Image (cartoon, rainbow, N blue to C red; front, side):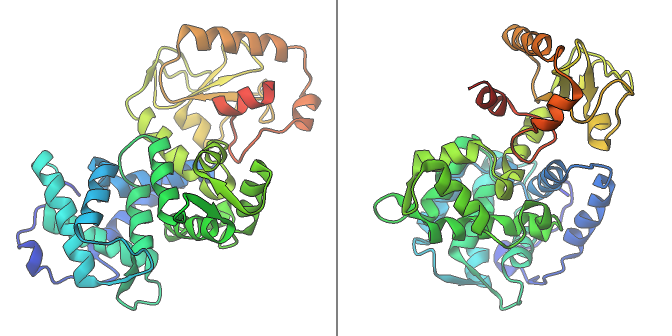
Length: 343
């Protein structure tokens, strides 16, 4: 999609269809991800294709925020009509084109991004999108550290005192879940019911009135069900160029490219991304056994830590792992979850 060239000035753009042919083509291409058994990974990989097609992987959070300020989009409850959305997107993509002239085709990017925003946040086809929705959508697929993204998202719904109540958190989660919903994946993340996630967050901080920024960030690091696709998206990006000097115990690929999954039950047992996503296992490794995911090559410290965990788990039965399920909503334990279990 980035290589596709069309030639017309941004302000003369005419397409406002909710069914842009290139967007339809993109979504149809995602059918080849059906082999990915786990919804969080499947959603993250779909989101990654969308992110690259819209060139939002090139957009720093600060650029988006400065453009919103430039267009005086400070009232998040405001409804933007299509011409206003186009003007804002034109500014964003002209900024990106200055840095990436060979990657960003401004008219095409504006057209596709407008089409996507309408699909996600204008289901009744009114031709209007709320400022808050537009910000959350663009921030979610932008470039930048995950922690910074959490801060930007929180700031969109926080009150003047810099805290967020239950209604405001629900608003953030509702807007965020529309992204996997449009990809046909929302059911795995709680659907449209935000109440369990809101309750989870406030129970985690031990209060029911408001949460502060750091409390929200800490909760997000636990990868709650409704938002787990977002940190997985960041790991998908990190894993794209990762090369691991290890052999897959199933397909024998070596070195492994992408994600590496290492058993915390058996010594020197590794599974590559393709085998893991498709659910392939060997006869001596059960799905209930813990595995740890790496999206970058392991360090010597991580190797020692994993060796220690395997040594401890060697004396635990399959029944033990069945009674002690993994935290979160992924088929592996993240490093944060491993540390939490130890404490």
